Every structure is written in structure tokens, then in C-alpha cells.
Length: 236
Image 1 (cartoon, rainbow, N blue to C red):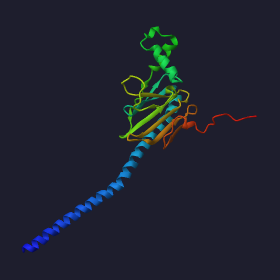
Image 2 (image 1 turned 135 degrees about the horizontal axis):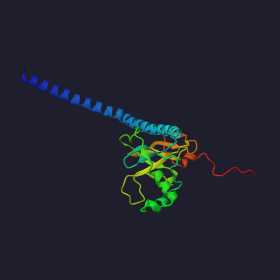
Image 3 (image 1 turned 60 degrees about the vertical axis):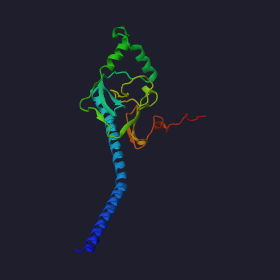
Image 4 (image 1 turned 45 degrees about the vertical axis):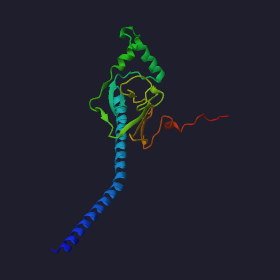
């Protein structure tokens, strides 16, 4: 082949190679535009599934508690992003406020069991009766998904992931109970994206009916009762 023809062929090959690179870059950019929203949607779907699974567990525990005459509690590990279910004595005590819980813990901390009052011994014994339900196991939230907060009246305010008010270096553990008569502690759980905690899902458990509700937005314990009036009707 003449030298001039060889040079034209070489230039043609370089041109084709450059065109191929440009096409490949265009494809990559197009796929990025398409897939990034899709990945976000997948993550939201995983969060939804995680929230739905937890809601279904609460619903099943109400029936189990009545049938088996047992108290169940869901144990949240906010540090690890896990939860599991334990069952205990039907008369297990749940404190109505954080003050009552803290006062009891202060009274029994460091004391010999025999030196406690009979009521305190009974509370300690019933709390110690809880054991993990093996059929459920420990459930871990999907990668990139965390508990933003868990609220029950025992803690006065929602316990938020990573927020501590004591010197305890252990994992953040929060309890939520379902009682032997089918009622439950008022519970509000928020599940969010680890990188964006402004959006996510809320699971709430009604204290009397035990009704479980899951919504695709973040609600706190006050939002749940926003429909109630601040004052009763004027009957005059």
C-alpha cells in the first residue's frame, strides 16, 4: 500500500477510535442519568420493605401475646441498626415515664437482690424473664438504612440514633412492649436513609387498640395525635 494511503487509513482508524470513545462516554452519561434515580428508588423500596416487615411483626405479636398469655417486647439496637423480639412474663412491668424508670433503676442499682423490697424483687424477676424469640432472630436493616429514632412513654422524648445523655458506651437499646391482653405501648419508630434523614417511613402503634400504621413520611409522637383538639368543646 502506498505511504499516502497508509497515512489516510491510520487517520481513519484514529477517527473511528475517538468516535467510539465519545459514543461510550455518551452511553455512560445516559446510563448515569437513568440509573441514579433508579438506585434511589431501590433504596426507598428497601426502606419500605423494612418498615412493612416491622409493622407486620407488631400485628402478629398482638395475637401471640393473647394466645400465649405472654408479654412481648421489640428490642431496638440503634447503634447496630438491628431489632429482635423477646417474650417474658405476662405481668412484666413497663414504666409510664422515664422518671419512674430512672428512679427504679437508681434504687436497685448495686443493691443485693435480697435487700430489695418484695415489689422491687417482683419487677426485677419479671424483667429478667425476657428471652429472645428464636423463630424471629435478629433482623438487620438494609445497608444504608437506619433507625432515626424510637419513642415510647418510658423515654419521654424520642431516643435518637447517636444522641446520648449519659456516659454509657454500650449500644443504644430501646424497648417497645406488647402486653398479654393485646394492648401495646404507644410506639413511634422512624426509619430513614443513613445519608438523608429528612425522608423515610414511620411505624406507629396505638396504645389501646394496638392498631399498627405505616406511613411514607416522618411523623413524631405529637403528629400522631394532631387530629385531637387542644381543648374540649364549650358546652355553655
